[in-house]
Length: 405
Image (tube, rainbow, N blue to C red; front, side, top):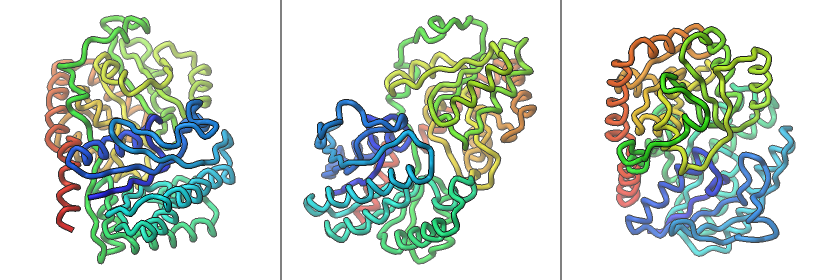
């Protein structure tokens, strides 16, 4: 079996889709699949091509046994819609012209968003005689419209038409959440749609194997401090200002809040924190994946917020899995599917009402006052993700499905 993964985002970039796709590729390779990746020059999240890949360097490479082909992409620090569209469509164009020179594949699996990559995927699947697998990690353009990221009616209409065209051309559609799967099934009942969730490498995120980190000592935390940790993209969708608002009323407690990462909202968050002059909020730069298990082992509770939108009731942020595998309870501000899985079913944390600082504050206090219950949550956390969201089991399920198609 030969599979080509087409994606704009891939290691050495750090991020959820990058990790998810690479981990899936490795596991499929280990099952005997000949798998290759067609991707862009790495540039995310700073929107600068990594130094080692400039001047036509490293356009072909092997990462942990996976052959990676790279094509040009336009990058700009501008946040304007025109620059963003140039970014997307430059890779649509270059990926097609690079990909058409490859040998035939049995399957071409494309990652969406960006939805526009569907243009290249459809054309390449025909050129390479490959069946198209359309992997949906976010329902675009629906999410872009509801978040107000895209407001141009003509552009939205074009995107909805492209979405339909991509689904119609696919042999298999995979959705990252059950909410995504149900949405697509309802609109396209004639198509084969499967759940391909994100997950976790439970052997990599294993608190029994990870040595103790000096994270607390280096950053000046006391033994009695209870660290509430957010690590990831500092974007609009996360609504991270709620952590700062909640921290304002908790300065006399031993709760400390860490926000680690980068993204478009970072300057706003730093300014807000400066305005309040809070000493229980700490900002740290993003780190390599290899450092995350040690950091997670050092903190106490993982905060996972999102804006209060119906759109996010089907969302499961990837940072959840690593935290739970490291036996860290959740302070979850995501309603819907995530709440059902990890709060109701797993009983691995507490839920707070999204965008409600008082609700968040109340649950922080519960954790502070109930350390024994917090410990029980931590044990249930790892057991649940190991049972349902183990990356090995997820890859095995996809492999079996493709074998039977």
